[in-house]
Structure formats: structure tokens, C-alpha cells
Image (cartoon, rainbow, N blue to C red; front, side):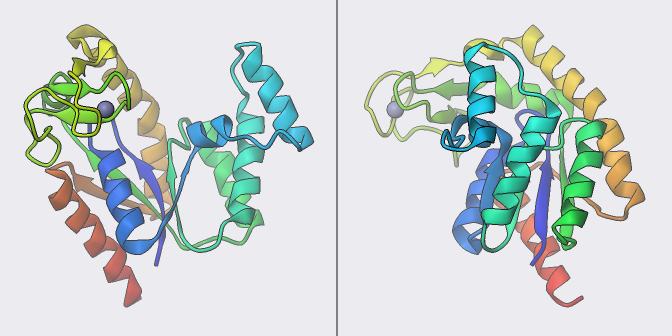
Length: 217
Ligand SMILES: [Zn+2]
């Protein structure tokens, strides 16, 4: 089974699909956000990263890469890489790491979604202020059991602050501009597969097909 580099614009449903893949195929889910949050403070690398974050500074590509490399060495089984690479520099670095670690069964999967559809979804998102679970009132699979109430906490849901129309538009367009060179990069290496974003179950089925086709290689 292939390892997956997940590439998807905001609101394409990458999170939900990742969870489905984790459940069914026991993929390790590696997100750089988690790597930074759960850094091991007993290592030199961890200490350095923590210091930088405590100072409110951005962790450099090099350090994120080091963390990622450590993680890839440590995990057992297949992985989904989520949120990395974010730019072409990182794509190149990742390529080197994978070479170095002798990992070559990789598929980059792009979940394609139009700006209009992404906006429609994003602007109908609701979040629980307590457990941070995200709901979507226009998606049967993601809406709360009781209207506007968190399934877990029983309290009222809020719309996400960053989901107003203008800021979403900017976030989406920035993402698309940054991701273009990455898509070209993986296309040139024959590693890119594309699926269109549908309901999470349909998107998941399309990705399953890609993974299973690969078994017969
Ligand atoms: Zn909740």
C-alpha cells in the first residue's frame, strides 16, 4: 500500500478523509502541526524547537524537516503526510529525506475543489467552543444530531471566526498559488493523482480505489 502525501485546499475535506483512512487502513497520520505541538523536549532538537515557539517565532523549514525525518524513522507501517510540503522548497527537501530513508512507495493525492464550493462549505461550518469539534450544517455526514448543539458537550455551536467570506477567499487563493508548483513537481515525477472533492464518503471511495489499484502493480 502506498504512503500518501495529501494536498488539499481549505474545506476540501482532507481531515475527514484522513480519519477514514486511518480507521480502515491503519495509516499513521503525520501532520507538521502535531509534530510541532508534541515535540520531545528531552532531545536537543525538541528543545530548540520549543524555544523558538515560546518566543513566538516561526520554526524554519530546516527544523520542521528534522522533526519530520525523526518521525518517519520512528513509525511502523504506512503514513499519510498532511500539511507538508507547503512550498516547493519543502517538496525538494522532502524528496531528499525520502531518498535518504529509502521510502519510495509514495502517491501525492490532490483533492480538487472549486473556490465557490469551498466557500459554500467553509461558511457553513460550525465549531464547538469547548471540544473544538467541527460540524457542517449542509453536510449530512457532518451536521450535529441536534441543530446547533454539540453532540459531545451539549452546548451551542459557534460559526468559526476565520470563516468570514473575505478572509476565506484570501486563504484559499493563497493556498492555490502556493500549491501550484508542488503539483507540477509531483506531476513531473509521475506521483500525482487527483480526485475531486465530493461528500467525504465518495472522496474516500475514490482514494481507496487509487490505493487498491496500486496493490496489483
Ligand atoms: Zn463539544
